[in-house]
Length: 589
Image (cartoon, rainbow, N blue to C red; front, side):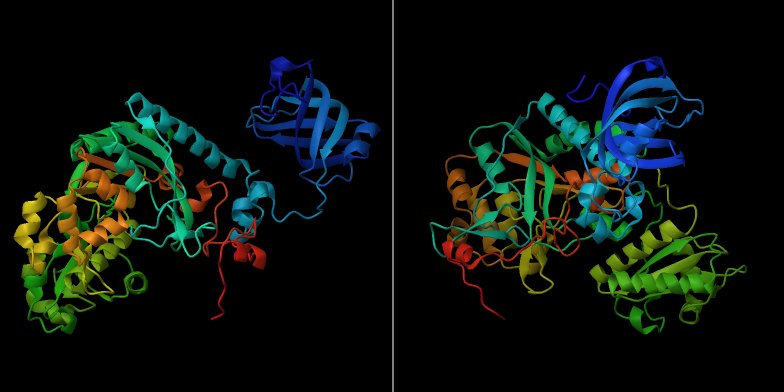
């Protein structure tokens, strides 16, 4: 029994007939059949129960009340004449003797119908999120989230990991995204930063002698929203292991995540462990992405050598990638839509040819490739009815464009997309460095804290040679689930000498390392153990488990795409006195 009620609205069954009960909840609907007769549906967290109104007194108590008013109903349970077998409580109803208003809804018109809130405009849903969450379909995602987080905690604890919380107010650190800064009242002109991740703290925990650490960690990054990424804050299963190799981390996460996917996932098929290990360069060549969706059976083929000299301008001197599908029956309008979508997503144009019933190339750029029919047929295993879509450009651009082509063809041409599963792999051997698209300078590719493969010797051998530096791989890995990056991790660079040398390659000296990472650098000089870790994203994990297309559907109070909390009105202006206290002056642009 709970205070103010004897049962919840999802609990009563036929065996309870004749019992005196009190239930509480929100008035979902009132259907009046006559002047003193009607049916009231009461809803709480657990379900719904029908209340039958049969007297003038009880009708008077509810007539005129707006939907979503909170009520307490005391009465007797009886068997329903007209049963609803679809509802757990569909065989009974409550005949009320007392109805009390606990919280009146003062709005005649709701922003949306509660049980159809997912059909409403997203900004309206977020502004009235407290109403949106009353929808059982929306609430179920949050309930699942709670269950999954509890399961993750249980599994990690069983494996000997300690849950340790790390600071929220910390120092600004160059970790790939913009920091959220917090002015320090007692230190004019200085700022704390909200952590983009507990990266440095968890490495310091390993240096401090804690063998296995984890936490469900809040992370803060000032970055734009995507369907699979929320602006502002997100949560990750942050973990680290001392004296650990890459395989130790990967096998641990496989042991933890597979049971979660099997128990809570929308799809019942999960990749067998150990998951496939796909080197980064192979992933880009075969799938055009470092987060390939392996539910698609198509792969990319390099046809650069085969088409050079064909006379088609975009091919000449460029890398050319192709994706071929058989039994293609789509019309020209369908192809045109495909090409438009590829260009919208990549900024690059694609081209195409088909194979007719005689094995000849037709349509698209076929006039340039007619003399190359035999070599292309052999390379791409073409047959009558095949369709080939191609991308050309610098190697990286051609790979990424072909990757989008692969995904669109795989999902749109029947027979190539096995959706009802969790296809999981590890992407490994990421490059340590890359050339920055904006800077044109050598930069860290992923994580500056990763140990380069080959250690110090690899850096010394490549010093001064950009091509050799770009060829160095890091002990770094990503978990990819159905085309989504779901975790990132690395074997850490725990040696201060190797760390300084790695940073020297991108133009930063020892003093820069000491200034940017003072605690970690100092701690490592006192003897740090080899350590490795990773951080699966909790929000993205729940999105995958539920099959939702937007990550905002699995976050209790998410911001909108513009990083606004419409419900609370954040971000907001503040009083001048508040700004003065933290020594901040606003300057008009």
